[in-house]
Image: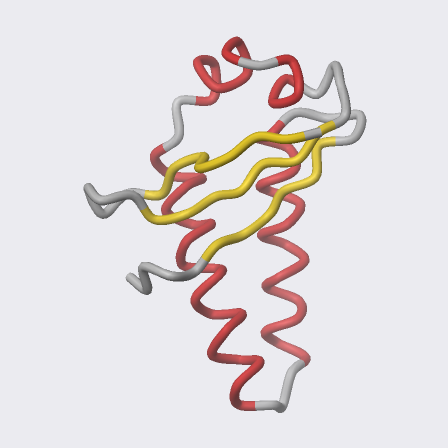
Amino acid sequence: MESNVTLTLHMHGHCIQTEAKNEFRRLTGLLLESCDEPEVTETGRKLELLREFIETADWNSLRSSDERLAGTRPGECVIAWGADGNAHVKEISG
């Protein structure tokens, strides 16, 4: 776990769960295509953060907590490691 790693998800027409899964697929593709060692390391850290978030998030609670997370209003959120060692939504904007 790299505590300074963050990841921004953009919810435009879909919910946070769909965007997290789409971003996971996108980052996996980048990781497989990259030959640049620093890029591979950074992408790997983001994938680790996102994997933890996907596996542990309470999707129903997140979607019901904010219309941007539900995808009914465009928005962005930042995912980061929390003090408890788990991935959390750190910030919502938009």
